[in-house]
Length: 220
Figure 1 (cartoon, one colour):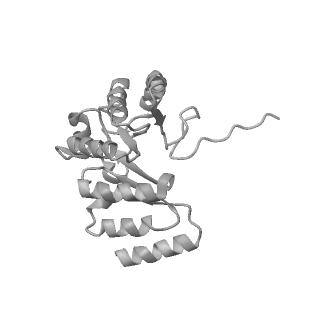
Figure 2 (cartoon, helix red, strand yellow):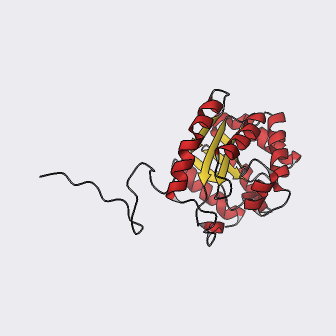
Figure 3 (cartoon, one colour):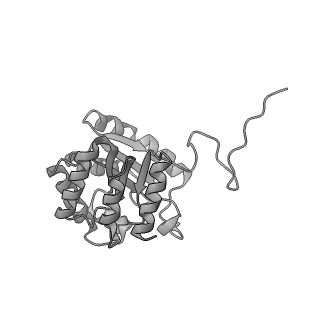
């Protein structure tokens, strides 16, 4: 869609009473007209959430974000992607050498300019450990963020065909149990860590053949 077409979509969403609009991708900032779209969306009554990998945010862009943050307050938020606690682990998943340092630079800019941000992190077969979560948490809290959401890699989008990255059900259960002390420790330091599992609740019976677990039958 063009910027003009998206503007009409924003009109319809606003008139229809939409509460929140998310700008995401892929990476939304690769569009040459992204900031035009962003400022249009930011001028609306609905809340606005920007999801970005942070690698293309420059100092002049921070000024735009800062202005919107000031005008919309809690109705605007930025979610950054940090997929590892080291350049080796983050850049491996992003397949972009140098991406890790660019994300840290963006975090520093946000911290210096008072832009509140959240962090999303994807753990995969090579990084799902309490130690890796500790490293990510230290970076996130060290840059002033107070919210970290952990996800596990799945074979969707760019992950299709990457079976070696996906975590098994047993892996996800083990990870959940191992990071519980980490979550409690960082909560005391002002960082809320969420562990999201979208496949199905890990405490439920395992799904078979892609179907939801069958409900238990009542006796009688």
